[in-house]
Image (cartoon, rainbow, N blue to C red; front, side, top):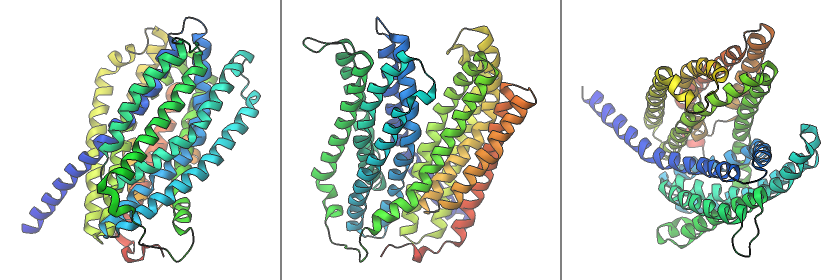
Length: 460
């Protein structure tokens, strides 16, 4: 009886802790999403060339995030490592990890900018119009430069998140959102001596907002007295650049998980285009709704990974299971609620996006499938976050590749295209990939939590 009571209390405490950590992360992610929405709305309000500029910004954004996602996730995996170091009482190691992550951020920024530049040099392969190319490439060049402040912000955010101060980056992101809207108004439409620059002006605004975010968070970290004990250089590693190598060793496979996921859903858009423009539009509506709820799951995943890192630092194996259980239960409850909202509110929700009857007819059916895969999408996202907390990334990466490209895409093509089922068939394939991924990744977490050598997880 007493053991059951203690477990219940520990579980409830983890639930509260996960919510406390996850909420600012989700709000911060919402702020980033709203920046993109603000860009879309403000560019769309231009008196001339709005449609062409929106198409160009969409192309540039797709190229940017498809390439940058690897580096962004690579930065984020440091948060559980910092949480672990703090739990061990090795405060200076937290600072070492921050400095190493900054160096990795600079390295990956250069690589990412080169890859984006290479995509721009070969833009004709995307078979876009000459007008689209003329608008896209200058804008793409600006947001490519913004990779450096974006990655540096992520490095600093991993530091504060790992120390369980997740609200810091949230407030800075929300402030940057306001700056972004103001900068957009000035540089898109012109103000005083500043000429109207349209989409290129939106690129300048994005770059400036990301610089503001990074500088603000860096000043906060280096100037606030609370962080001084973490930034002291007391713990020197015997092997040169060992932390940088560790971050890359864990981070690159983690980043590839995000890349293959983005590539899968990008391929789904392409296959929808093979069916019809209407099917493609309906898919965009339904997947946009699903992406909003997925954002909450990624926040829970990040919080769960941080708590697992702390449990490892405390050599608390039961705590690892409790952290994992709390994160997965929260994900199931939230995504289950969203599934019900999707199922019963599908008509109202879809009509909030479009009034075109042909698009609504397909989108409503896709949203029903979206309600089904909500649960599995949340479980696989949280399981990945928990496994990153365990620094277990190679096999999970293999699982994601198998699930998405071994099951999801082939099945989507077979049912949707070859068998002629259409848009619903493609979502059947996507759902199957998420079911497979959620089952295998959650199994992997519990299997690794049971057998992992907590004493061996140190860096010399």
